Amino acid sequence: MFLQGLKEIERENRLKKILVADDEKSLRMLISGTLEIGNFLVAEADNGQDAWKMVSEEKPDLVILDVMMPGMTGYQVCQLIKSNQELQKIKVIILTAKGQQADKEAALEARADYYIAKPFSPAQLLSVVEDILGEQ
Image (cartoon, rainbow, N blue to C red; front, side, top):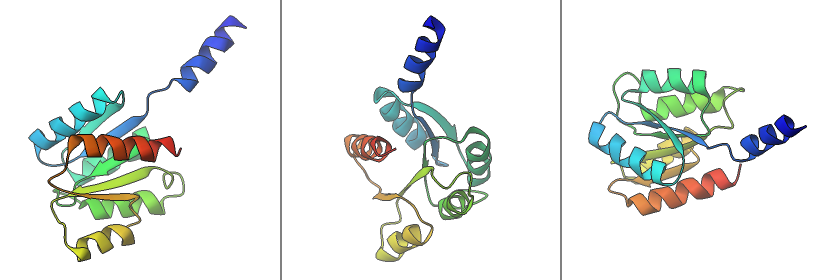
């Protein structure tokens, strides 16, 4: 009975897992540091192919994708996530320097849950992440 109670507490207090995929190391570090302050578990990928592999294996709660990455674009990774029945509930944020209306429409077409243009405020990002993950 005691162990069962501990397992329930652990399940309720489970930290949300977030994958950050960006080919720019300094930006990944900034995003990861911001999210760790918010008490999230963070993994990193520096290209689209690794991001897709990690999403498939780890099934994070949220994926933050840059658009322009080697291997696969963030849009392509997002489309793969959202078209996979097992993964489609994973939330996706597109975080990119591409801020034109056409880019926002491409993110919408890829079925991203949220779009943030660079430069961004770490506080803004943390607020968006907390809002999105609070919905789950």
